[in-house]
Structure formats: structure tokens, C-alpha cells
Length: 205
Image (cartoon, rainbow, N blue to C red):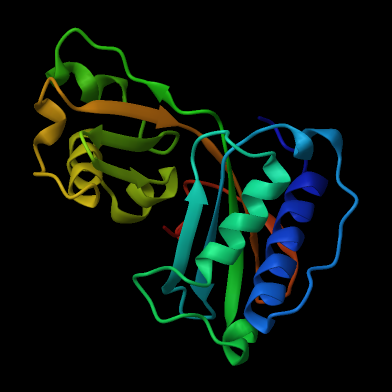
């Protein structure tokens, strides 16, 4: 990880351009990117209403299936069509701030017994993925901080996000992965980009 401020700024500018081009149904302009943007990595793009901060969309790719640039572009386009919300309209573009989370590859949390999982979940650092059969749920690291959850709450809420019972993380058949993220966000729509601390009060899903 350890993306520079310039790389974080570029990631958000790419996401903003991909979002606006997708919503306006025009061709996205190209960017010159550093080599690490061509390496496979996961990314999420979050849209927040400005200035209220309410969630307007959050879509991403946790696994490093695509080059980072493509992950950002696809996540930005997807955030405009988050199924939890109406499709983003062109007139809304000036009212949403863009946030990009650049992810480390998810790693399975290895434990002898599921009840040991909370000891290995670091709130404020880790994001979680829970999978059981066809069910899968993910929560970014900033969500636990925003909601003031402890490790057990975080595990339970990720299970619920997956459509499972809250205590499904205690089931031997449930796989739990964790990952970390570096977060960069617009201060205001189309505005300056800053690195966001996970301890910040304005962290979003």
C-alpha cells in the first residue's frame, strides 16, 4: 500500500471523471497513470451527499481481479447505479462528493475456533468480508469507526450485510477475510482531495 498523496488525488480524479462520463453518457477522457495503477488491486468508490454526508452509493471490487485503474473506473460507474438507491442523475453530480478506498488483497483470518475471530479484528484498520455458501457481505474499515462498533459487532453486522444471521461468524462453514484500505476523498464536489483518516468523524460506508 502506501499510496502517495498525488496517487490518491489521481485516483479520486479518475473516479470523478468516470462517474460523470457514465452519468452523462459520454466518452471518458483518458489519464496518464503510474505503473502501480496498472497492477491488479481492489478499490471501492463511495458517493456522499454534500454537505449532509449521507450515503448516495458505494460499489467496488475487493479482490485484485482488475488493474487498479480499471477497478476505480468500474467502481465509479457502479456507484451511480447502486441498487439501494435510484440511478444517479446528471443534475446530482454537483451535489455528491467522491471517495475512493484503495484496498489490500483480502486475507482469510485463520483461527482454530470461530470464537477467536474478534481477537484478530482490528477496528479502525480492518475491513471485513464474510462468505457462507452463496451469501457474501463486505463492510469497509471506516464503517466500524463511524458506527462505533467493537470487533464482535463488526463481525455481526458484516454477517447481516451478507444476508446471514448475526452470529453466522461462529459457524465453522463461514469464511471471514480482512483487508485494509487507504482512503482519499473530495472535500466538496469537484473540490480538493484529502487523505481521510479512519478515525475521522466524517468516514462513510
